[in-house]
Amino acid sequence: MVDIHRKVSSGSPLEPRIGFSRAVRTGQYVAVAGTAPIGDDGSTVGPGDVHAQTVRCLDIAEAALREAGASPADVVRTRVMLTDVTRWREAARAHGERFASVRPVTTFVEVSRFIDPEWLVEVEIDAVIASGRG
Image (cartoon, rainbow, N blue to C red; front, top):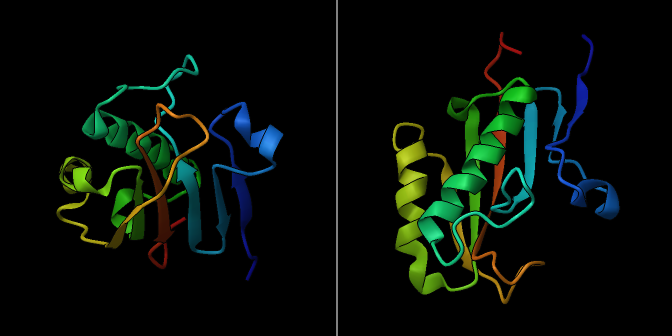
């Protein structure tokens, strides 16, 4: 059996500067790094809007999952990090829109801040690709 080890990039200029990959797949396991609400133009998507920022984070993370050969149905864990945990319901709404039928384990935590002060949320995802796929 050949073990697959693949690195996925989202094209973020932070990836080479920091030295990380958006996602890494090893065998059937895929880990998606903390994903911020960065638009294609490099600006913050949805300033002040936790829901919009969470949707953007999930869009980026989902694209990385797909490039690694996984799908949202393979997600087993999510971590939602917020600068203001009292706004968790806004992030939870976006999470539920994406994962209501998947229902991975999840954790919502408050952090003091992110690299960019406009970012209100970041999301991490772990997935295990079902046997026989990928």
